Length: 172
Ligand code: SF4
Image (cartoon, rainbow, N blue to C red; front, side):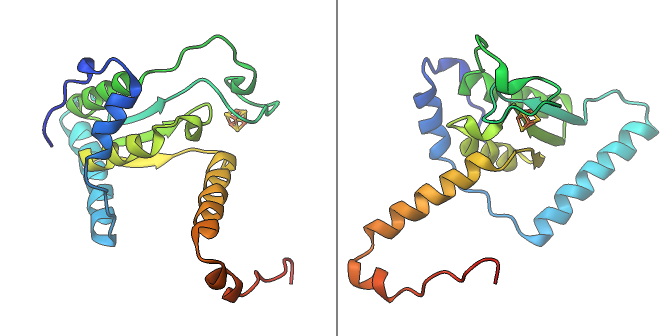
């Protein structure tokens, strides 16, 4: 992938606009196996040759959460006055981590789904070659999915909507 100078972007929207021009990563079982195998091979290689590399990194993307769990290690639901990384700063870190030898990236928050650019961030990390795991409490993702489904539904012609079968009752 062509190297991007992330420092050139003054506002998040410019960096996000560039990220949106990138192709969408399409996972396949083969790609998934390759990606896991590469992490494992990197671990073995580092251990065998006693190479110090941050192969596995937890990247904390933001300082906020939409829950206030009492057991939260970072008290993210109550944090105030923290400034999150810009998209450019975060992407620069992702590039640097790849160069340092990181191959397994866990994207964390706070609640990372609260970042408006998170889908583009994840896509970029996958295109870069990381094996990515993602931590979320699921609330924002569910809200986004509901909103986009509702938007799609209201944009359908009324006749098409009325033909749709009602959702099954839950629990049955
Ligand atoms: S969902 Fe996670 S980050 Fe959010 S308050 Fe609970 S433990 Fe903390």
